[in-house]
Image 1 (cartoon, rainbow, N blue to C red):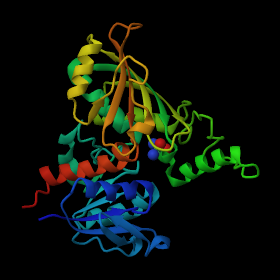
Image 2: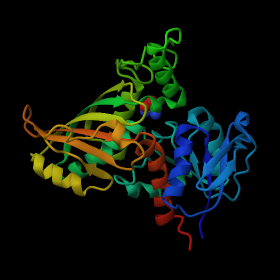
Image 3: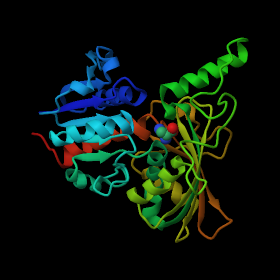
Image 4: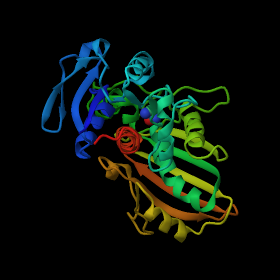
Length: 340
Ligand code: 2RA
């Protein structure tokens, strides 16, 4: 006995990855529906060896469906998530709409699986921001060993975080550099992204940080521990897929770099690639398509009493979005919705 599963936003980067990962992980699907906006109705998407036709989300009847993976952005989620939830379909939402709602659990299964029991308040579960997800997977096992006081993180986020348009912009601008007459002005990003980096993701807040940086602070506290101080600088880089992060951690107690490496080697969802030799570390092009949160460059930070530095890379469309959502669905199935 499996589940009746809906993927809403099935034509986008994340929606397509959700379908791929449901198939790869053999999630118990008895029936599946793929939804998108009216203009995409009839479009075909793959689900394993099947071809599915997109249905119009506006016309969809949620009655009798068990789990819905949403990747449709906050505005559309605001309309459709309450309808699905009211019909008894548990929504796992990748947008930021519900992440900060005290009645909606924000879950990274390797970090706070017990939060799944809070889903019934609204029948909605929130998926974290991609840059938060990989970071808390790295931080949690270390926090359990030597309680984290403060985190300083700089991110190097790929253009796929901004959707297909972001990827197209990098491609077109890069081509335009080499093919005279094909120059492309910035559109999706605030400035040229080809051969450049942009220290702004999302809008600016009152205090001069960006909303992406605010998300990392607030979400880390909600998922892990409100006592952890986090400061972030989020940067867009000319990489297609794969977010990288330079993470500096200050602990309550001393944690030796070798012990930290051993802990991370055993941690759920983590792959340590850390040799102090040329190429002995992970780079974003190597993480694409993988489930793991990769960690390299683990080393003491001697400038503070109990400091540690590390480099963290993960596929932002997978652990940062689609994989985490499917893992939440697995958690829901194993711990709550159990079907015979
Ligand atoms: C980004 N984290 O990278 C944001 C949304 N996916 O653009």
